[in-house]
Image 1 (tube, one colour):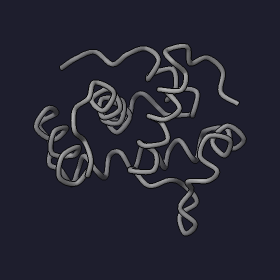
Image 2 (cartoon, rainbow, N blue to C red):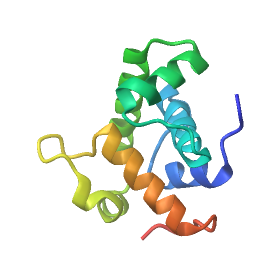
Image 3 (cartoon, rainbow, N blue to C red):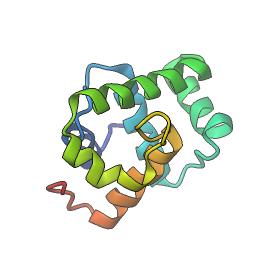
Length: 121
């Protein structure tokens, strides 16, 4: 298992993610894999399968653990920061992004930062 880059950890922590949740580690690894050029989309066929093999879990539990981590961040994180990052991508019914929406937005933000991700809006 490769180490997760510090800027991914910093990004997730600033959004309110809890590092003690398995979904945090799964999501951080998923972002790292995508940044390395590994095919992770569609998540159901590539991303979750890859993480399930790497972490010794089922694909369904990988998906659910990531959903739970996102839900926990939405309950504990700063509403202003989360809305600034994901305002346009929020699922209208759930009030938070889907796993796919979260991943795509995170990848966009992290790649735009050019490795200098500091302060969130």
